[in-house]
Image (cartoon, rainbow, N blue to C red):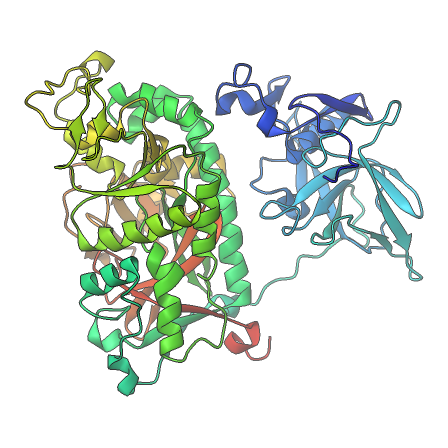
Length: 632
């Protein structure tokens, strides 16, 4: 907003009223009242019991306007731009469907009042895109109503949010100008039976999703030092891997991989959409204690998990999706929201490896990771010192130092705490570091499940028996991990609620909530005949490092399995969707999310079908489509 712009109205203020007497609200979230809106659930809006969306986002207005004016609604979506691909709307009273058709900006089918105007992802509408409702159409302009853009009260008696310049081309096409130079309008969506001039979704060449396996040229430069050991994180990395290397297996040390721009866009899109879907599913689980019980989390922790989720400030910094990508398509295996690894490899090491070995001619998929982490820490709300807690493990050390560097670049004061021996109690029963500074803000390399293992055998299903600070004899007992991470006044990243989306028990919930979503695999709590018929993977709902996984092929039976310490945990059964095999390696794409959005990608590969803690990491490059499919 410029100095001459109208003043922003507080969150929830009625900015104006559109056609059909539909109110448009301010979404200035910085002014939201924490008393009226104490938690995430309070932001979910319903009309006549119909969920319209989150207050007061652009998609919420579109769904509410459709319902109040026409009695139909489109399905819940991850991004506003997804509306452009929707084939139908659902009539609420009888669950019937009506066709939707999309028209590209410049179409000869002009927009009309009631059409949904869709912006693409990018610029002003980064990640999500945007949607508005067209209210009036003229040869030289359109008027719209919208939420989550300007948040200013409309002038008296004006029934629209903004007016956009438009023009009719000599061929009859109607073009609408986007008022933001860094954004673009996709087109408009109309509920109509008439398909004339409607957008026909072009089928993508599936070969563009194939990964290419390539090899850097060997030479004397292989033995040269190419990491800067003056940087603490790089020095720790070299120590952990005993040299400058990316892949540790000798015969794969020069191996790297390449994907097309089209495949990269699909990974980015899937990462952004899936994060929001996992958040929807997390909220769904936390509204039902019976469903939450299937996650095998001690019930004594339920209040703490709810507190963590309800705290609007307690957001994720980062996570990692594991994908299978090939000409068969893109599918997600799981979301590692808690203690995700591969960040320094994705954001720094793969680029330095590519430069040193002369394979940096195409784009890096990890070049934005560090900057995104810095931005995430700037928005984290940390006040005071951020304690970075890690175990005495070489991999955790370089991971912790990389994150510490990003947080310090964001202006935070950080202290690294290795192990727990240096922690002490203060006179108020709080845990402090060796210098006596109270631990209030934490980023950790430990998984939450590690903390739960410390208490699982010690507690009953009663908050009073949760053995934390109030029941500890501090004269004889040193602070434990749970005394820090589960203290109600300590803010932890990644937050306690990430136990839910990181748990594989959420995968059947997601499939139930989004049954037709293309990137999800069929996943069940019980082994079905359909899964037996087509092949499946059995996974413990809580597990790490690829432990205790069994792969069953429909024809060959058990083809791979791993051991581990999670064999006593409940199991989910996921549709078999094998990783592609390239030059003897099973190849998996890891996509890093930062602050809930795509940030980077890297490859993990292994000679066996199950990616585990010992699987190598390889550089990934993004090439023009013509490099993958020459005629494309």
